[in-house]
Image (cartoon, rainbow, N blue to C red):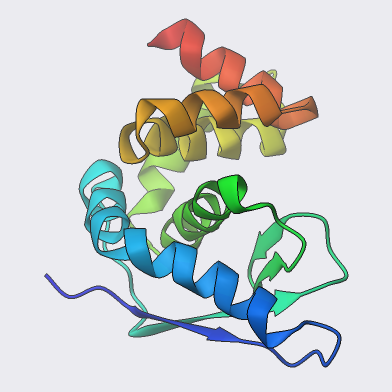
Length: 156
């Protein structure tokens, strides 16, 4: 199966080449393992041939559209963050997701949209990442991320 090519860009002169390469290198070591797992565990396919990830210094974590991640992300969070945003990406750009989304809305009617989407993201993430990375993700979680992890773990 073909997966989109992940292209990293750095348009910010404040981000050093070393820091940029640090993030790219960490991802490249896991990319061939993670991309097929996202497809398998989500049951969806990527609709894009290329996904551009911009490394920026003005955000704390990441966003999936536009796909940006912080240059300040510690090494042990790089894989979790990029994987998390890729899961958002496969859900957002996939029409097959609508059926699942309707189900989640009905099942978790009292939860915010942010919690509901992260229930799905975390459910997939839990099956994509190794257990030690999942445990770190849970430990780092706050607010709606933590609520979503609590609901995922209560239903598993």
